[in-house]
Image (tube, rainbow, N blue to C red; front, side, top):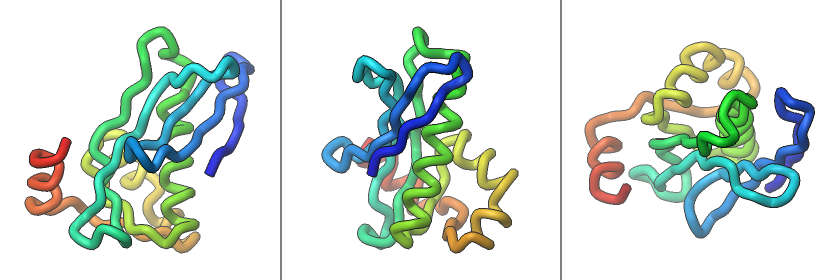
Amino acid sequence: MSKTFEDKTGAEVTVSLNESTQAYEISVADGTVAGHAYFLPGPEPEAERIFYHTVVDEQFGGRGLSKFLVAEALEDSRERGITVVPVCPLFVKKLQETGDDYAAQGGKFRNATGADFDIVKRQA
């Protein structure tokens, strides 16, 4: 999975899935990784992803990169039939704002439970 967009400055950025680091990554045109949206397998490892931390390097701030990361992670999860479990505040906010539309398009998500937070505490 890899998709390219133009950020707020008009520069090209690419969002891709890095299975080995369990993160969606956003890279700028020269290939530098500018940020990550990290996830862990949920209680049903093949069916759920707990998104627990999203970060963009300071030098790339103000370009809207975190929004691309969250949106593409949600879209890719929807396409793969994976349930999203938002722990990261950015994912929580996005799903609060657009969860009905996400579900209407076939996306699945559920609120995080104590067990999900325990997984994050143990593994992250």
